Amino acid sequence: MKKGFISSRLRSGKKTLEESLPRKIETIEGKKFSWIDLQNPDRTDVEELAKKYHFNSLNIEDCMTKFELPKLDSYNDHFFVILHFPPISPKVGIAKNSQLSIFVGKEFLVTVHQGDLKPLVDLVELCKTKTDQQRAERLLGTSSGLLLHEIIDVLVDDLLHTARRIIANLDDIEDGAFDETKSVARSIALLRREINKLRRIANPLKRFVLEMANNVKRFSNEGEDLALLFDDVIDHIDKVIETLEESRETMEIYKDTDFVLSTEKTNKVLAVLTIIFTLAIPATVIGTFYGMNVNLPGGEGSEWMIFGPYTSFIVIILASAIPVVLMFAYFKKLGWVSG
Image (cartoon, rainbow, N blue to C red; front, top):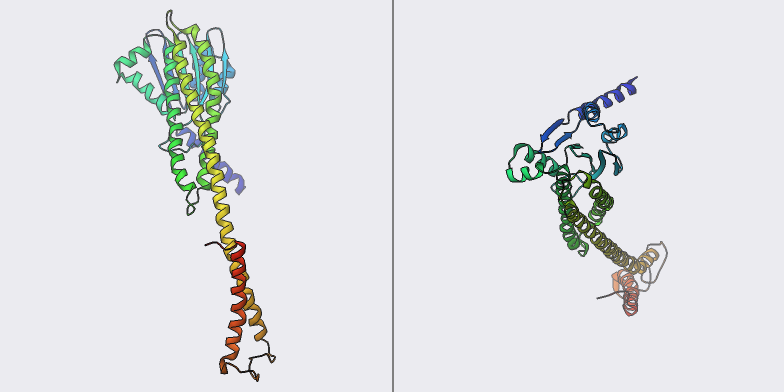
């Protein structure tokens, strides 16, 4: 009973946390279409729009799923696409991908997301408040295809900025990778994880943007050439992919460098400890013999007292030091002991 009660409390707490997320629905009227943006929506919010615009029920399920693979479904009067982008953070460190679901038709554009895509949130605010009157009128005064391009463009630009922040982090890791006094193995592993996450976002994104460019032609105005605009977005995605590939190769170099230097440092430490242990062997052996309760040359009760009462001490020191000196000279000759 106690375990079930705790599990129930945990589930209840999780539900409360989800419900506490800011739920926001914005409807912005353009000249020829409407833009509906849903942040952290309930199922009922999406289902109401589905009835109005005749969306497929399977697409509604995909919208409400926290993580769905990127996809594009095309219909007679609209198309539906799911894309992934990294959430915005002041430094590199991506917890999970942010999902953006978009319905695009001639008279509407619907965006569904969790509100952690700051460029999109800022764009919604700009079009709503008209803080940049000229830009807002340009986006809302033509077609849903142009607005779709702007949404994808600002998100891809931010993805490019994130990739460039990785380059800045690489410069910091480079200094540590060639510094034997610092350990950068954890930093290398974390940055490699971020690079792989961004690669999993950028590689499929290019293919879906190409498909969107082909589909959005149906909903553009006559004489409106969106192909060139989407080509520019694809060029930016190519830069992101190229940057990530170069970063990945650089990280492999730093990883190998850190491994080699760490191994070399460990080998040096082990070599020093081994030599110290080896040079201590004669003293240990001689000390063991003279610690026995037997008569030895120079020992207590021995007639061999060449150096007086300290003969035992002197004999032990000489018997220990001479082999050490000979062994050290031999190691030096073999090159085992460097300067």
